[in-house]
Image (cartoon, rainbow, N blue to C red; front, side, top):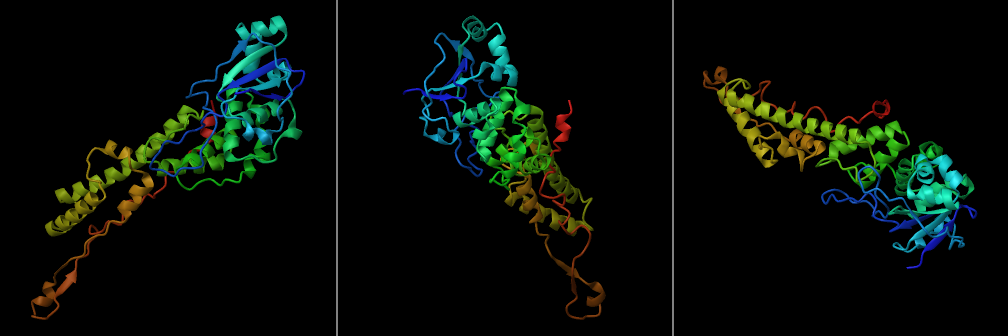
Length: 364
C-alpha cells in the first residue's frame, strides 16, 4: 500500500512514520458483559507493547498531504504507513520524550544533529488522534474539531500521557470532555473503562468516583484496564474493594447459616431447624453453598449477589396456641414470630460499592 502523508509544518525537520496505524484499541474480551462499539486504535504505553522510536536514513518527506483535515482521516487505509511532517522545535518544547529522542545519544538524535532532519518510526497509534495531538503541540487550535467522541478523547489522552505533554492538552477538558455525547454507562462495559481512564486523566472527580463504583459493583471478574495506562494502584484498589464487598456478603451468609446450625439463633429447636433448612435451600438455588470465599470472585458481582440475598423469603409456620386449645376452642394455632425468623437483615449493606476518590491518588 502507498504511504499517506500529512504536513503539520511544511518546513518541519521531523517526519514520523506510523507503521500499522489504527491498531485495535482498548480491546474488550469479556464475553459475559455488554459490548460497546468496536475500537480501532492502539495499545497504551504502560501495559501494552510500547511503540518503537527509531530513525531512518532517508530524508524527511516533502510530499503534499493527501488531505490535511483531521475529519477525513477515516479514509486512510488501515495498514498503510502514515507519514507526518512536524517541527522539531515544537516537538522538543512540548514533549520530553521527543526532546530526549532528538537530542540524546540514540540514533534519532545523532541523525538529527548531523543532518538537520530525521525520520522517526512508531507503530499502532490512531492516526486521527495523533494528528489532533500534533496540531495541539503546533498551536494549530483553529484546525481542531469542536467536539470529540469518548473513544477519540481516550485515544488522545493515551498519546498525551505517552509523550508526556499533559499540560498542553489540559485545556481541552472544558472544550471537549465536559461536552461528550456519551453518558457514563450504568453497566460494566468497555465504555465504562474508557470513562474511567478519561475521568482519571482529565481530573474529573465525580465521573471517576461513579465509574469506579459501577465497575467494582458490577464486574464479575478482576477489573481489566484494557491496556489503558490507568495507574496500577487504582486498579489494585478497585479489585481489592470488589473482593472485600463480595467476601462480606458471603461471610454474612455463612455466619447466619452457622448460627442456625448451632442453635445460637432461633428461639427453639424447631425455629432454628426450619430457618436453617430454608436458608440452605435458597443458598443452594443461587449457587451460594461453596465454602471457599475465593470461589465467588470470578463469575459473581456485588450487585447480583446482593439482589440474590435480598430475594430470600423467610418461611411461615404455625404452632399450637395452648392457651386456646386447653379450653377446647377451634383455631388454636398462631403464626410463629420471633426476631430470628426473618432474612431481612441479609444483604442490607446495599448493592453498590462506594467509588474511589480521585484526590487520594493524586498525592504523591
